[in-house]
Structures are given as C-alpha cells and as structure tokens.
Amino acid sequence: QVQLVESGGGVVQPGGSLRLSCAHSRSDFQFSDMGWYRQAPGNQREFIAKITPSAIPHYADSVKGRFTISRDNAKNTLYLQMNRLKPEDTAVYYCHRYGTALTLPYWGQGTQVTVSS
Image (cartoon, rainbow, N blue to C red):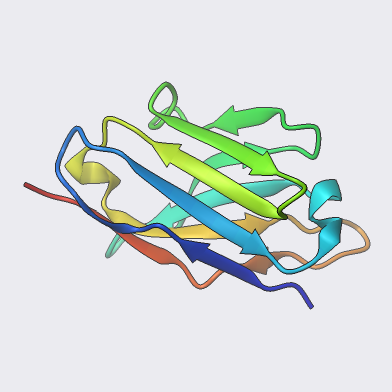
C-alpha cells in the first residue's frame, strides 16, 4: 500500500505563488511516474503535470510556463511550484502515482488551492 500526503495549499492573491508537496510513503517512489491533477467544483478532475522517474516533465497547456513539477527521490517527495496564479487555478489539487502492469495507481487526499483577491 502506498500513501500520498499533499501539503502546501492555501489562499493566495492572483499573481501569487504556492508550492505544493506530496510525500510518498515508500522508497520505490524513485521508480514511479508521478503527477498532479486538480478538480474544481462541478468539473472533472484534470491533468496538470507529470514527471517521469528520470525527471522529464510534461504539462497541460493551461499551466505551461507558470507551474513547475519536480521531485526529490532522496526524500520521496513530489513538488508543484505554482507561479502567476489565476482565479481559474482554484481547485483541489491531487497527487497521483501512475499504475503499471504490476502496480496499482494511487491518489492523495487532495489539498485546496484558492486564488482570490
């Protein structure tokens, strides 16, 4: 069983920044594709960013150039640096470990990000 625990959410003004963290409970984190998703009220959960075990990132067009995904394999931790935040970034943000042919996918419990003046 894998536990993913997000932190770092909060309330920020438009144009501000936040850094989300996701603590992964096992050391096989270093071999896992990891990602961030978000879900706003009334919307489906949407892809934000993904990072491979070799730290190659991929981004949704909506956040490209503003958000940066990174990982620290020594700390089993995933990060999402969010800059130039907009009100439409308001959502619950979820950490995700992708499944493989041999492993299950996992989700964190989510952390709320609110962008408001």
